[in-house]
Structure formats: C-alpha cells, structure tokens
Length: 253
Image (cartoon, rainbow, N blue to C red):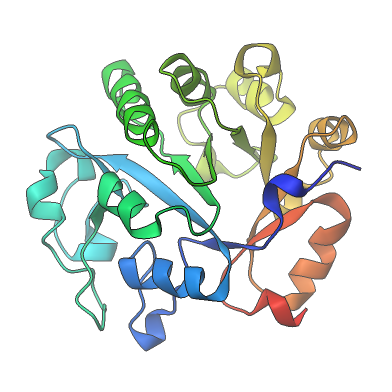
C-alpha cells in the first residue's frame, strides 16, 4: 500500500463545476468553489498561438467557447476575453499565471500538461509552466499523458512531484495515432527510468493494470480518474489512494 500523504483530500476534476448551475469546468468560479470546500484541484494547460499557457482542457475551441479552430491557433488575448459558454458569471479562460494568483497556495494543485503537436510546442509548454511555477509557494503537482512533458518540466527546473497519467490504452478514440509499441510503453510504464515519475494518475477502470499495481506496491501514490459517483468511489478505493471526481459530493461517501 502506498502512502497517500501527497493527495490527502479528494481532487475536484477541472474544479468544482456544475454546468446546470452555470459553473463551467476549468473556470475561476469552479476553482473558487473547490477551494471553499477544501478540495484539491485538477486542471489542464494548453498553449495559445502567442505561446501563453492557459487553463483549458480541449484541443479545440468549439465546445467551451463557441469559437472555431484549435487552441493553438488563437491568441491568449482573444481567448482570455471570450466567455465560457454557459457561464453564469461570464468567466473566461484564464492564463496560467492568473490561475496561480487566484489559488495562491490555498489547496493542492494537480496540473495536467496537455499533449502538444510538435516538439517545439511541447518544449514551450513545459518551459513556460516551469517558469510560472518557480515563484509559486503553494502545494502543486504536475502530470501528463506524455512522458516527454514529465521529463522536460524537471529539466526546466520544476522540483515538485511529477505524475504520469495512464490507462489500458484499449480505446481507439483515445489512442488514435499511437503505434502498438507506444501503447505498450505507455500502458506498461516502461518509461519509468527516464520519467522517474512520483505518482500515477490512472483511469478508474484500469487500476488493476499490472504496472499500476506494481508501482503502487513500491510506494507510488495513485489517483483514480474520473470518478462520478459514490459507487465508483467505493470501487476505486482498493486500487488507489485518492479520487479525481466530478458530479457528486465525495465527502458524503
């Protein structure tokens, strides 16, 4: 059994959001609601056309803003003044630096570096994120599906816990563009000597993967994503140390 001190409270997936109530994922309001409840926060970083890290999940703009095209095709000035669709408070996507200023060390952060298209963008996102975090005093972790991001952010000076996100790599919609060799490497965590990850963030239905079970037995904490009910939380408890949740109150479990 691994030690769960790193993640000692449930992690609100993209903040404590509720679209039906006008609180949109990865928004200032969703993050503030999570802080007020004492939950840790998971969020996502993308890179805009002018090289600015922004808190935004999707690769494209349509679902969350109504604009067209990739996040990497729009400037931070435009994106960060465009309201998120359905936001009751008119929240706009935030620059990473503004997000850090908002949270100001009040709760643990679990920050996902999203996969980027190309080496230059991958390096830039890791570099800019590390630079922003250099002066951040609060508890923070960084994670990615991309092993290279985990390697790079360490090389760029980030000294906090770094995690690899994984699952069974058996979903064609999620695995598009990956070779069999890449799927095997990512599923089996054979990049461990290079990434030297500190924790694992695993899809809740993949917690029984031999690689995840192995590393957890050696003391690597495991968070389970994305848990959406009390039943799923109970099912994930045996194979993980903490949940990344949305859509229910984990404090009532």
